[in-house]
Image 1 (tube, rainbow, N blue to C red):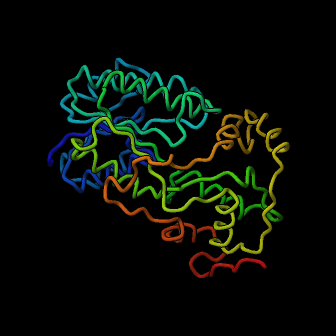
Image 2: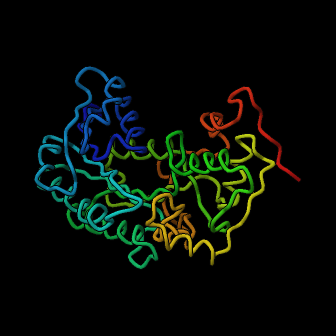
Image 3: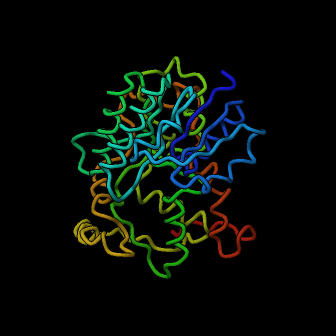
Length: 315
């Protein structure tokens, strides 16, 4: 449906910017709702005249939300944190956004959650993601929920972090929870699924979709891929014993700590799709594996950039 007005809470973030681009290409009008709208101004040239609006809004402050939702056909909540006040952002913020949308007469709502969201999860991140889903559905019963696995792409904070570490650490590279499993999904594929639901929500109302990529990879697999992709294939990967990793995570509140306690708790459960869950196939999307696209941006971490080749794996 063309000329839809879509409000994107957190639309200038990692996933939000890709969804915004897909919506603009599809002919929708978008309203980027951010605490600091200027951070998303880079999106403006991607649409036509008047196609993109910006507004200051914070989902933790309900009084600021009605203006962001005025006249919207659908709202998407991308807002999330990896550390900090999970309850305030993931639960209360999501509830605020959904309630405001219902009160404003917005027909549809999309909540971006995460694979592993469960009220009985070990991590507060996953617990509050599940509670946020429930709060959204209480306000908007036929809301659409997306649960992506780890999302990778040029601006991610996952693959890029490992690449930075591999380039900077001269000796063996430590790997925490090397056996932990992930099903990484490419950001452009996730965005395409979300944008399709936003443009034609009818078939997807009330559904939950788990978006995992075509491969299940361990933490060790991912780190090995990264060091080879940036020409550091000869670097040794050193599994960190759980006792050591747990002790390091206990001090995750310190500046420069490699991992927080909640992130450590998240690593105790595999980040993969549940059996029988609806995924990319519901949108006729064939997700791309990490190796198919990573060279587009990992090349920047090679010693000689595009003029350097990949290192072969050490025997």
